[in-house]
Length: 262
Image 1 (cartoon, one colour):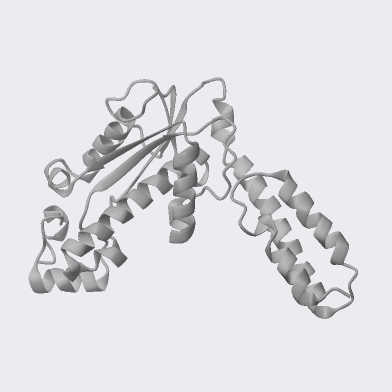
Image 2 (image 1 turned 180 degrees about the vertical axis):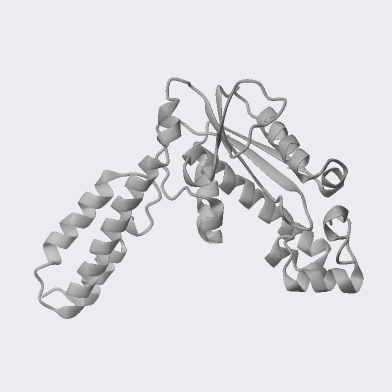
């Protein structure tokens, strides 16, 4: 009789354990293993089979969720280039606001794309690499604290979005925006409330923007270690506010945001 450890080793090597794209063959591969072992009466084997049936069901559920995330892309499928736009960094006390514009291929098969705030840092990093690999075009727009102070955070956000659009190497025909209509931008704009949970393009933009900004804040942490930017990303965590009260701000702080703390 095959050892339980050998069964576990085989199951642990199945692709479904780390599958990040749609691939029907990974389920077929798993079903073959389940069929082979599900009549084994040993409790440890039955527990393994139950665990992998849950993985199968979770994978299939994610495939369906991902299809639903393409509802707006399907609505405008007659257009060649549909662009999702989102930003991160409107609320922090320090650092830039970062916007991203992403045009995904029509047959984008990446799973787990979602609102970046709902994903772990590890998952965001994995998805960032996949999105950058598979996207037709990506544009990043960055507006720093001095400009935020000068024109206010809303106008700075619009500016970052326009900058992101200008960096694309193809011209988008439809813009799917997270809740806003961007001034001074021509063409079809579709503002979607909570768009990063409803559109795969907007969600992809939110992930790329979030990873880009987080990496910047980790670099700033090396220059200004007193504020804990690597962990708080410039938001108003207690340690960050305590540092502001004790030593004041630094060159990447938004003066209009921290005046109540210093």
